[in-house]
Length: 387
Ligand code: ADP
Ligand code: MG
Image (cartoon, rainbow, N blue to C red; front, side, top):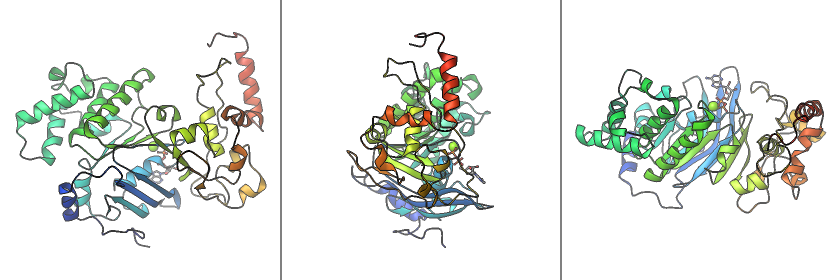
């Protein structure tokens, strides 16, 4: 198998990427980034990503959500061409029709930063501790625009810091990364990501390493960066809660696969995959007068090296029936107000159910009962204290 079996266009070269730079901005309905049947296998047969597909249009935000180890980061690293050679990657990743899978380092480095920028979980992955942050932003600006004067680049760096909400940006520009808090450092990374006016920003758990109190402000900074650049955003998180206010569409991943894909409204109000129901019900509820309920999904995801034959979620799924263990279900179209798909043979069971009612199955089956009971008794003392 070649690396780009399903590629429609030619593999990116330095020339095709340069042509892209001169093209008119994408039309509103153009597919900017198209990931199709992406598979990543590591040595030892670890199948980290299995058949993931998604499309992004200009300015759109797609949330990718799933537990740790579900293949979210590996998917993005494959899109960016950042996996090492030991990873076997198949499928297709097209940016404005140009195939990126299998492209050499040189054209890929022209794509990275300029066309597709990435924000990682730990800001220190992207920042160099020995240089002032202003210098690092200026360097980024000048890599892609050699004609920019030092003065103009410094002014732009200060402007970018202001956009992401750094107070006293004209003084802070001369600070080193260690003089910033974690949240402020991540804002600097966002400023660098937007510096070259990318078309797509991929943010991989951008707030996970941060204190809860600063998470919202960093998300605001990402929104500001998106507004300034008009970029599309792929927002990766293990926390469905942060998707709601940020994304229009959500892709739910489990064991390396897409198990549900749809609009935020469909996925939040009409989830059609029990795993999504479980994720939603493990979020704190704000809309109830009942005591806040948190129902974790018990158990752990399967080994990606020795996947069982059926649905990979079935061992943890309260709706599990014997047929679930026979064959892995495809992602198929289900009901919704927008295109919506789910990978579950029991998806019909969830139709017409109130989400909260549906979620109760996670509390009342097998081992869950013991935890739910323990939780109830631990919390039954101070009624109302949580409101
Ligand atoms: P997520 O970002 O959803 O938490 P990842 O995409 O990082 O998950 O990882 C998916 C799976 O791939 C995990 O089981 C992880 O252990 C495995 N994995 C990631 N990188 C490598 C690698 N370089 N070699 C082998 N396995 C890897
Ligand atoms: Mg990750």
